[in-house]
Image 1 (cartoon, rainbow, N blue to C red):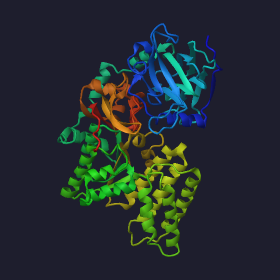
Image 2: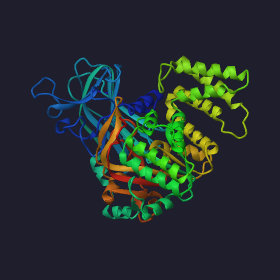
Image 3: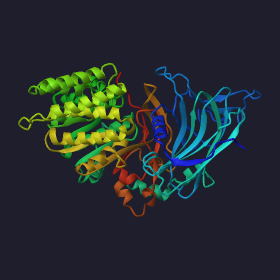
Image 4: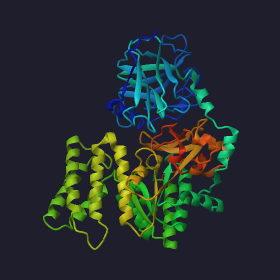
Length: 605
């Protein structure tokens, strides 16, 4: 019997929530997964239908094998999973004292059943600290979203070189939308793991996943809601245009979502939608998930041809936009503006990088009357000094952070009090608000994602009121910001009284994608989507590039499979395969652009 501490259920502490959320921001390897012995695997992690993601680079999470007959034996054969901590980080020489290996699961088919996560664990010589099996559930679109989230932990307390069986269980409630299982390691030295297994109600995870796959009749029904859709450079067919018109009917805002950053085809299908809406459907404003000040330079290129498109895209500061594909999108917008005279306005929704905003606010301060001019100029000079040396996204010291926030509030008051000049755009006040927004995000890292989405919604509303002629708006951002779930930008827009928002997402079955790995941007392979996932069903429908009318499919009474909760991939800037999240596709999305095989975007060199 293993030597373990007692099993406990408790509300998720803030510190652990921070750790777990932070783990997903670190580098994760390409998909390999779970249930079984390391001996049978060729990858870093054991393989199953559902994949694990390590929270750390290979220096911390790796597969080790030894010759049979040596002192340290594996539980099965001669291989195990090694979790190491307190080794130097390759990127910056820092040290990592916590490592997790985890996977996030949809609870579809689990309600009322007991989930059991088990493994064989042992300590390497000289190791210290803790190693635990952890299971936590969430009632929201993902765990860690509500006070009623629960966590169960089983710790291997005895430091022994012998293999010990450890398991942890938790009952799945009907209100639980998703569950995460993981190995959690803290302290110095190595811990070895083997024979990792997840079972639900006595059924293996692989069996459960396979049971979620749609029937042939469901696949046929799904195909009836799909319309072939051309990539950029191909003419938009009459059928695709009709389907797009049905989807956007009544929309004041159309939000385009990237399910995965760094894919060529997602940018190509978005370019098709952009061109059609701008040229034929009275849309005039395009908001990007990028910093407002930098996008103003792109807007000058689109409207007046000012600047070099490659250099402008490179200046965006976010690698997910710095691609050859987005340069072509920008050039297409310029062509539309030049030849069709649409009066396109491009704007940034974001305010994470305050550099240009500080410079612009200081310039606006010079137009104030005294003594406000001297006061505001001093304020932004001090903020510039605080930011100097930490970079666009760096974090100043806590005391400086507090000072920045106080100064930004003072500057915003001064510039917002300036009398309006004949109805002109209040640029100075807006740039002051951007500086304050950036300060608040740095000051509140635990709520930065929620705060960022609320800020982006405020900036969209400002752009709609002040920029360009009246017209409808297109937004382009990652799924996490546009999906109609939780505290996304589109959810905040609805609360702010925005016109009807239509959300069009993207999905792919497999291929490659561009992502960040320890500040190196390169192509990663994307494994085939899981059985039962939205992408797996769309792949089975057999249309290589298509648009799915999700609203119509959800209202189809003969199609109950579609209305159930399914998994869909959602990857951000980090390489973090498999990256599946649990969705009821509608109402999270009104439509989905599907590309069966994706290819990694090409960075601007």
